Amino acid sequence: MKVAIIHYWWLSNRGGEAVCTALAELYPEADFFVHVLNEDLVRKTLPENFSGQIKTTFISRLPGAKKHYQKYLPLMPLALEQLDLSAYDLILSSESGPAKGVVTRPDAVHICYCHSPMRYVWDMYHEYRSTAGRVVKALFPFIAHYLRMWDRLSADRVDHFIANSKFISSRIKKFYRREAEVIYPPVNTTEFSHEQVRGDFYLCLGQLVPYKKADMAVDAFNKMGLPLVVVGEGELYEALKARAGSNVTLMGRQPFPVIKDLLERCKGLIFPGVEDFGIVPVEAMASGAPVIAYAKGGALETVIHGETGVHFHEQTVEALIAAVEHVESGEFVFSPSRLHEHAAGFDKSVFKQKIKAFVDQALPQA
Image (cartoon, rainbow, N blue to C red; front, top):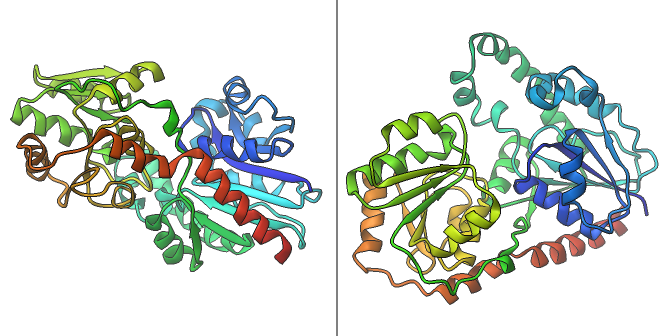
């Protein structure tokens, strides 16, 4: 059986790339296709026994593709359709940007693991457009219109959808009118220890972009005066640095050993944004840290209110403060071992087992 794995772009290691790595562990002889990539990073990340070829679409050969790949988004559907996958029996696409729209043999099985339908053309279209530059703001309505039609039609090329959460399953049903099995993405929970002595600081970890709401966390902790450590980089970094009080420490981007240490010592993770799944909360729980999360998106599926964290139901500074005060008051008592045990249900080994079972069931139906 010849297997192809299709991904959108691989220039950093995040949730989508963790899925691709796990798929490569299951199918080490698969060939890997991507629009644009950092080849050194990819080869270091893929398992040692990976023996397949790594191939790119014509997007990678366009000027400045690694840095400005998003500007080539309108060409990506065409690039996918130029890939010759006629030799492959099983196609596994990893979808968040354009990846699923490949053309396959009629008898091939195409399974799409969907992190999310493309946010920037569907439910977050107006938010993305409002923050774009003048030229993109003027052109994007026409580009998005075309991409929506292609995205919807290309969903019909997929034989089976897998969603990374119930939240995304509902979006797949809304935008693609397709049912999707839910298999949570892989988290390396065994890398974290829950036995460290906890500190007195809270942690906010992730990209510093508007929808992740790190600014809300900074404002809340400015008012409370409690210590907060913010780790991440992005367009809001300088603005957050300027508004952060003396109790708030911005560390910028940090290597994994530093992040691991902070997760294992923090009093709790602050998670104020809406994520499709959210790997960081699971890593925090694996480290024995409770999660204070906005009650929407993947956090509703990973964080158990009162047992592994606290939910707040309005995305406001006041609601976040109230949730933190519940923790500070001792109203909830969190067991690090229980948190770690709960996180283990999202481990990479569970993901691989469920994906393998799903594929094995799908193949005889071809």
